[in-house]
Image 1 (cartoon, rainbow, N blue to C red):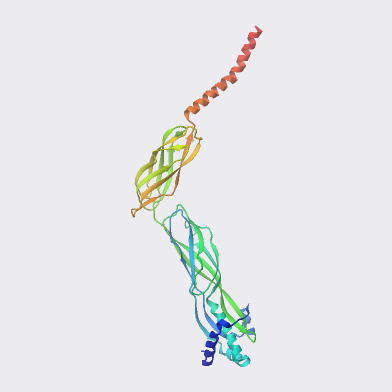
Image 2 (tube, rainbow, N blue to C red):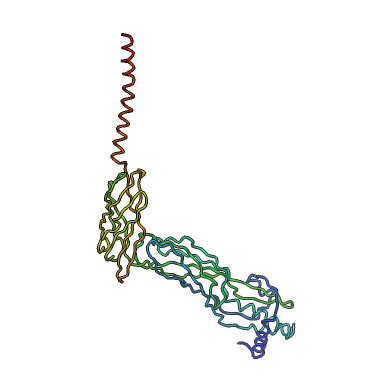
Length: 355
């Protein structure tokens, strides 16, 4: 218990907090009692709480940033005066100096609830979760009691294209240091500190939303330079929800043109696949190679809202035109006749001269 006399001195010391200047050093706990008078035992610690400062719901294929806020709700729960040390210093150094020492220690002891040198590391609870944490560690400085980070920690993530809908748990492991206590050395009033390392484990949930998800699973075509041909593109709904009134669309660029860029697919349930047929024109001078036609699926979701799939690619090969092949064959034949015929002609001519 704090005596009445020491309680009065405690109140006086609190009034002096804002005016006291003091030196500082870090000290090992085992030698504190040898060189310093610890006027108070202080109780409390930091306590950090994590929460998302952004939406927790994502779509498949999203590249996003998790904004994680940390708040320190640690509390100073009490002081206990060391009456023997206080009484000894009152006798040896007098009331004025002792009050100054007490004020210095009180000012320092209040830092017990501050978390310093905070490091936060984000990881997957289930290592098979379809999430890539692209930056997993952040250095966050310090947070005093009752305060939050000045700006949230940022953890870039990627949700895999083939992620199943559901809730995925992430682990936030936080380490920090805090000042456990301090002590004063008479007669000069130097304040010594000693620290402890702490860690906390917190959890954050992210949700991959239920939704239709489309893929191009097959493309069929027989296109040559200068052709006007059909392209058959097969789409699959690999997601979790029904997509209603689906319309497949293509967007073409040189060497393709089309006036037939939409095809109705109807309702597509999870696991369904349907084929859309488009008619495209190919330029006569198109380069013979493989191309990718841009395509997407417009649909109505379960809330009767219009939605669009991700941008998809449908591979299409353009071959040489038949007329081009025929021309090449004719040229080859002429060259071949020249190669074979020239020696025969020269031999026949020489023979006539000899006769």
